[in-house]
Amino acid sequence: MNIAIGSDHGGFELKEKIKPLIVELGHDVEDVGCYSMDSVDYPEQAKAVSKMVAEGKADRGILICGTGIGMSLAANRCKGIRAALCHELFTARMSRKHNDANILCMGGRVIGPELAKEMVKIWLATEFEGGRHKRRIDMIDGVC
Image (cartoon, rainbow, N blue to C red; front, top):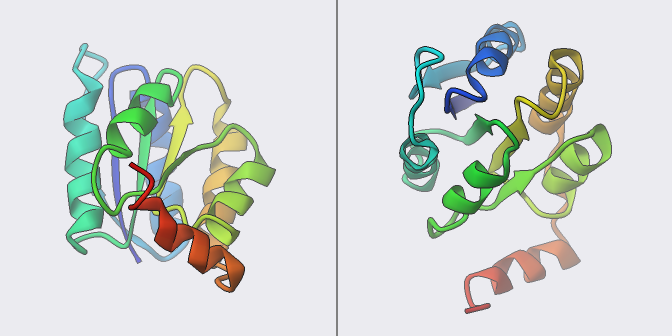
């Protein structure tokens, strides 16, 4: 898979630890920034990753800010994006299995690197279950 990844300054260090794991798992990774601990506005990276996923230029995306909240709010504004904010293994798995999340959001100031790596492994390996969940996913665009 081709994975787009982005962060703000609050998620930069965790992003840098996640990128080699993605490659180790056999995926391609495209980093849209940020590229240092210098303060940036997270909506820019959220938009870049979301656009890549929505346009099919990336199969899935990962966004990391300080809490993950801002990234998930910004990413979910994009049509076709189902960004899930996860802080532990169960929700990472279920976000794929039941919600077909195409972007994983995490908080670099909330979870440690080892937990984040396990979450990414599970999230990338878990397939969408379909069935009754597909009907619900199809309804999301019509909510508002």
